[in-house]
Amino acid sequence: MTSTNKLLLEAKGITKYFGTITALENVNLKVHEGECLGVVGDNGAGKSTLMKVLSGLYKPSAGALFFEGKQHVLDSPKDSQNLGLEMVYQDLALAGNLPIGENIFLGREPTKNIGFLKFLDFKKIQEMTSAHLEKLKINVKSADQKVEELSGGQRQAVAIARSTAFNAKVVIMDEPTAALAIKEVGKVLDLINKLKSTGVGVIVISHRMDDIFTVCDRVMALFQGTNFAESQLDKTSRDEVIGWIMGKK
Amino acid sequence: MKSLVGLWEKNKMDDKEKKQDSLYVKLIPYFEKYGILLLLVIMILVMHILQPDVFLSWRNVTNVFKQISWQSMLALGVFMVIVTAGIDLSVGSIMMLSLMILAIVAKAGAPWFIVVLVPLFAGFLCGLINGLGITLLRMPHPFIMTLGTLYIFRGTGNLISGGTPISGFTDEVRYLGHGRIDLTWLGLEKSQYLPVSLVLIAVVYFVFWVFLNHSRTGKWIYAIGGNPSAARASGINVNKILIIVYSLCGFLSGIGALILAGRTDSGYPNAGLQSELDAIAACIIGGASFFGGRGTVLGVFAGVMIMGILRNGLNLMDVSSFWQQVLIGSIIVLAVYVDVLRRDFGTRK
Image 1 (cartoon, helix red, strand yellow):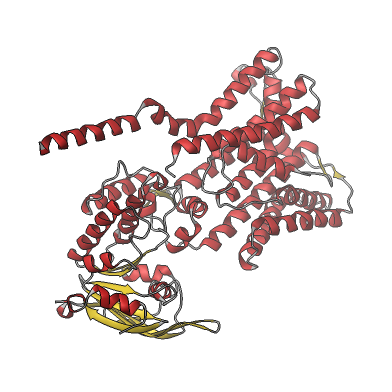
Image 2 (cartoon, rainbow over the protein chains, first blue to last red):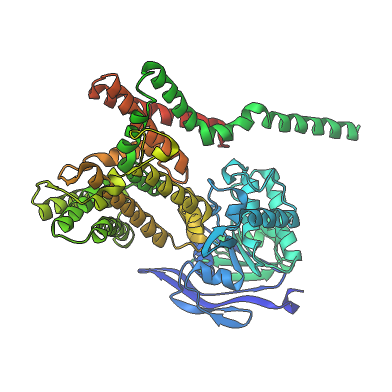
């Protein structure tokens, strides 16, 4: 099914050096519309580095990124956001001291002009937040609640809501369930399925086979900074994927 | 049976909701926001009871505002820096250097509007140096950069002035720090005037309140203090915002220099000595968190007022300045301890 859908994001031959260390070597990756790609690999396999390259936080030493068929050079996370490529970071890139709404729109706050001055439009932030949380069926007491008052699962939901607030086409999630209580994992995975059904391409980096086999359509393994193996999910098994992580085929 | 269990679960959840919304919990955000004002009011009442004839007299109240006028500018600047989880130790030296430059330019016979603008520009430039040093030189902590400039700026101030006071400014230059707004048209006596510095405090604090709470840049300043990596990941240019914050802090110190020039009619080498510590203390008493992202402009104002009233009240009662030091120190520790307790209640761990 995925091969017939539109190709959204493609990375070709991505290589990244940090000084003398080779973090990534000639890595390729593809994501289609409404598809979830699972990226697995051991610690240090290069998963996070690859995601940071895709989000524009790191510049690749070599290789090219294509978005909807066109090549792009990303200089900052802002560039990737403008393309419709969003990242949900493992450490939940949220400011705990700010309310939910202001976190969702952080860096892209709607403003209104009074004279020649621009002021934050708090009413609009609140309305847009409520509507967006409603759309994703995320329950919180109010959009004005501070993020530090939320549970881990709620925070992850806010982080995902944040990534999709501006019509994202591809959402990259780094260990979306790592810090969550077991009963919250299911809710986050449901949310990922909901995103897929709206046509968003999702990349999930995870250690947890349960996550991969619940939401992904395809899985690829990185090993020591290179493409190691890749398969449609229905053509592989947990044991095989675990073997890939450890470098065995 | 199943529905019964469901009902029981629902009741349990309702109870939980009720508990969360009890009056006590509802009051926490208000206490968080206005608790410091409560402390201020209590202090004013206590001082009034102890000194009923003098403390709330027109003369004494305006005196307090005149005394805190330049400190309030430094505190506001340091507050913005503290919100970003930084620190600026150089504000006292920035003020002294700006004051010395003002004095030299005034003595050189420059027209008053130049003399008035010069300290603002000098302060801004000093702040810019701090900001550039912290971001471009990648200093491990703003403490180090501003500790360095604390010495550099004061040393420069002494070098250009020869370390001696320079006195005598025109009335226009002294207006902000020394000017009086006559209120006899309201039927008040000649002695019941409004100090210009009080109006200046109100205007500057209002402008910065709007800036911090209703502009994008202001929101980003709080976001950087809350989680700098979140701010960066959101596409916010963290370094640019930090440079703006330190520059504005320097600019406010420049305003402080202008006020001090008016008040003392002189540029002197010891101006603002250790005032950076007073500024930091006012922020902390006012509820700003050293970890960044927390605190309000109103809180800083209350912090400045509490320190001003404490000093003024203790002076009125003829208490030695040594006791003032002990008391201010105790209030800092107490204020932060109350904050620690509040956070234990307010935040999920």
